[in-house]
Amino acid sequence: MVAPDSHCSVQAVVLVGGEGTRLRPLTLETPKPMVPIMNVPFLERTLRRLKEAGIDDVILPAGYLPEAITSYFGDGKWLGLRIRYVIEDVPLGTAGALKNVEQYIDGPFLVLNGDVLTALDLRAMLDYHRAKGGIATMHLIRVDDPSPFGVAVHDANGRIERFVEKPKREDAPSNEINAGTYILEREILDLIPPGRAVSIERETFPALIASGRGLYAYTTADYWIDLGRPEAYLDAHRHIFEGAMPLGPAPEVDGPGRESVPAAAVRPPVFIGRDCRIAPDAIVGPYTVLGDGCEIQSGATVADSLLWDGVVVEAGAELNWTIVASRARIGAGAHVGRGAVIGHDARIGPGTIVAANARIAAERPEATDQTV
Ligand code: GTP
Image (cartoon, rainbow, N blue to C red; front, side):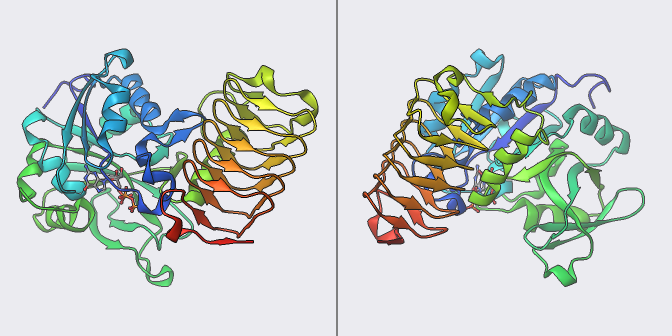
């Protein structure tokens, strides 16, 4: 065991190898951990959180579009971290990925899902883990509808007794769900078979409970959201704008390019990237993020939407509650329906009506759902 106040010696493994299928087409080119939150890759925010918590030794098991991650973070020195990557030839699942990095693990370690945005205090969780003395501690949060999640049942002392994965809402044994952050003692790796895909949720934690060794619940009321679905990704930004998720102050108009917004066009709150061009008679906002180098032409409206870098919205086009990936172009007078997700480099023709919740990918025209 490490000394109680020594957080520095704890390592962290951030799981970043998933394909992020539910976020397609955004994840066809950008792996989910690199999806921007207020124009900064989500994984960068996670790594900075680790650094703040005194953890500077990070292992990233990757496999899907890994170069996007390795080329951005390198050896991690620029973040004050030591980052090592282990690339999977085939996906090994959430526990198989841990077994596969066993040679780098020296002692107790944190595991973070690469798609969870939370204000969880990692130091407080580490203190709790040490106080309980179990082999594993799992962060839980309470939600109104636990049915899409792994639901945990624990006793009054916090000891987890069982899990139910994605129960029917009426059958859920509690409303406390696995929030995707764990602290594990190294010996848990002995429970994971090598060389094949293993799910920590479905195999390792149930095996741990069956073995009688302590798996403890750490339930908090912190802000938490799983960014895995487009609606959640949009919601997360709204929550950040509203101050529910502390990413620093959320002023009315923010971002490195805030000077470039003509006052008449802005409907706060908005976050504007560098080098954007916005027509004075366009409408940008509320709850809108523009990446770097976006262009919003005359009479266009972009509300409740997230635009990545280099997106062009031509004259009179309308976007409301949408996500548009880098370099896509929305033609003049087009109307993009609520919940639609437009992929990298996609072209929406002038006057096109894009159906609500459509997924439009430039690379895969057969996957589009486009009505005119
Ligand atoms: P969906 O395909 O939309 O379900 O997303 P996902 O593949 O990312 O799966 P999920 O959200 O269940 O994964 C939770 C976390 O584990 C994410 O941070 C994933 O990147 C990561 N992950 C999932 N499967 C693997 C894997 O096989 N290997 C590694 N290294 N990480 C994984």
